[in-house]
Length: 282
Image 1 (spheres, helix red, strand yellow):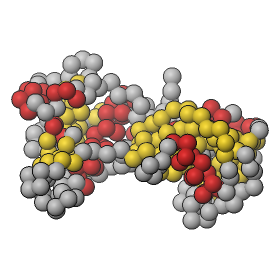
Image 2: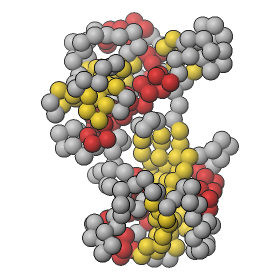
Image 3: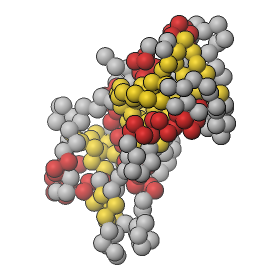
Image 4: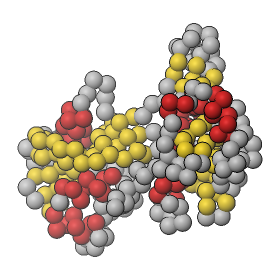
């Protein structure tokens, strides 16, 4: 079973009913309704459980979907940060199920988008939420705006029995990870992988294979994991992107994954896709 975070949502998103306001209202009034309250990167908790009691139904409450028990789930922005727990530490919190953590991720990304798109990018007028949260409509210029997901390619670069990893200055001491970068308009996944590896480390790559993907709700990314086979080995680091990039042997990588490397170096945590692509490249 994968240890990646945010990939196991149990919800049927019911996209076909979102435009039916009466059906959404019925779900809001359901006695088993679950309402997540978030503020920024925090979610409201009751002890070790997600806080899902509906204290108030706000005008901009987003429908997330229906779980396997037929319970509807919604999300709303909570203006106060009282009783909020940061989402990132919950990733390793054993009392929060992976399924529920995935629902939190969906809620966080959706609420962030609404917070940033209250006004029309076309004419500047105030927009209104529609389709249970999956559209914002501008009544002035009749433009519709939809939530976006930003794709990011993340790749383990391999050459023979060595794997290229890098680190940024802001990271914790000793941490190395796979290289990554945002996809640009008009670019394939393969083109993005090749461009980012060359820009960040000066390495040219050939064959590229897909490994897996992971939603990352900070704020709304889709991480696309790949393995890239290097056709050059001389590293030329872009210091605006990385502090260092380095080739590691498979034995070193295994020690890093076990946190037993003699230089106290380590690779990404198991809940992150970087860990999965590094494991796949071994």
